[in-house]
Image (cartoon, rainbow, N blue to C red):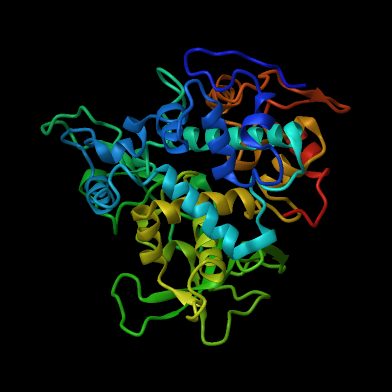
Length: 448
């Protein structure tokens, strides 16, 4: 049941029952623009959707706030961080995480994907359908806020600060003096391919502050188990000589098809030196994914901080589904695409929406949107399941819950009480494997 609230400071709704009268809660309220416009209209005082985004949902000062300010000073500031800041922050300063970029990304995907894309769409008429959309929106906003800030500090509107995970490129010793001995920093050494197959094979190295984007390996540097198909560029680049195939990525014994987001078991790991059971496309060869991008670019990026194979899979999906279809996009420049992702808020939000609506994390799994928007089980609509599906585990749960309650309860006026159900019981606010199994089993294969 919906609990009704009356707020004066930052209040969202006098009560949600006004929605049907003031915002036409029916099939016309389709997509995030309509849902957010309705929430902004019901706010006290009423606001435009854009102002609601930058004054209530987030703060103007923290929207792309890292690029609006200055990086932390210090003698040990790494060259990689300075170079990345200089390269990406000149584009769309203060506007990278804007409301317009978010809505433009959503509408672009909707126009291209039609009924294959149902983010905050469908679900029937009335207040119950609208409440479910608000819950999913609260999950999405809370996840973005946590991923780009790392947890609430003085309030809960401090998200959407980082275009990329800046801390992954920092030295661990900000206050070190120039005369201090050179400490081990935040970059790593790893075994040469094909031996880098586990995180415990990483080793810290010294001299991190002096390494540029082509040398600084972050802790997100991908394993040898990730492979893509490549072919030479027409004009060779000494660092990155190959174009990357946009249709598939190999992850150990699985092939991920970026065109339709399916995973196919292939048997043995398909590493270049090993061969394997899945041949590369005609005219191409297998390459380790970690060799297709300057090492320092393997960090979390965009509103959901995409990393490793997720970025490569979005790269493939983007060119197979959103790019101008008048051109053959079977092979594209991955480095240039990632740089565009960091400079274009629209593309970055498209990456977040792809991850939310299309990305599958394991064979047989369903996308996040399928669970939050389609599951008939009440325990599957809250932040516990979202954390389980986005975070690769259950760390940072407290920060995610705090953000979620801010959006769901304080702003949207819904109950912040978790749902406990099932046998054995699961809690909708507590990330767990049990909750993951409970919710994944409730979704039909045809879910969009």
